[in-house]
Image (cartoon, rainbow, N blue to C red; front, side):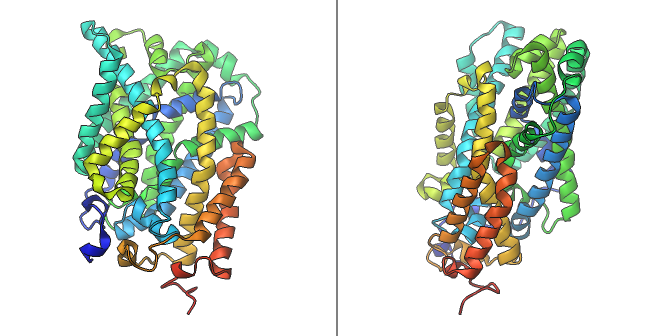
Length: 446
């Protein structure tokens, strides 16, 4: 590959060496999907769904997530390319910056949110052990810690995930058990016995869980390219669901149960009130700290860093880390954990899903139905080549898909996928809008 043509940092080049086998890849996904945000989504569904409906909504949502991860992760695993480069096939080198930025924005918000939750947990541990109480100090320190860990790249992240995932699974099971044990009566009255809904509220709940992870469904190639090359898709799908399904189930149900019983939505407030034993409380808070690191670094820090590296090449990896870290502070995450913010976060998920769903649809349609899983990697990196511009067909398609989704945000992810795919396929095969982006395909116009 000609270095003069690529003009990208080392982190964005195709990978030949893969560092994850089955167990380590599973550990990374376990660590990456223990998101306190799932707890908040569960909290927002109090009064809308009963326990059975919540379980089914979670099951439907996590199966959809696992399937989508397999579909969109194939290119990264096969060709070793990250999300920002994979986007170029459908959107063009300049055009790829648009979906890249759309993906990066919610990641920055979630990075700030989960860093604040981790800082609250750290502050609570320090106060319990040493009487030290300074949330600002903990927040700044926790932000810096995650940035430093990210400097080591995926090899450092792998070590954190391998160690942290074991602690996370044990603590997660214990937290759920403690919650059910303490709030059994309230669980019966406020969750099990309510009528709930199998209609719009049910599908909206399912969309909320899918939407919460829709960011990773876009940039899964950032992770799948680290997994052994040409990995078995059935095995990969099993890894995704076994990591995400139980974790989402425990976290979502814990949020639903505790908020129904106490009205509290701040995870730290919830756990400090739910666990009476000081030692177990400290261990649980340490779990939350670990969970934020493993989730944040993989899901919410590295993806926007790659996007920024591609958009502003002079920044490099470390410079992009600093910029993303500062941006995460500017979203004021301390406001996002307040009680009145739970419904707002749910709306936030639904709104950005209206844009991420169409991007996912274009990527999958382009890869499987236009290119038949064959990518010209050299062309993707050639910034003076035929796809150096913007594929207008792709931009129009995500715009139309977003409009359709915004009509009813509670069904955002489901309502826009098929229409977006059809619009993109027709624009690419029946019009001249994507002519330059059909090179090497059966639809190439001579």
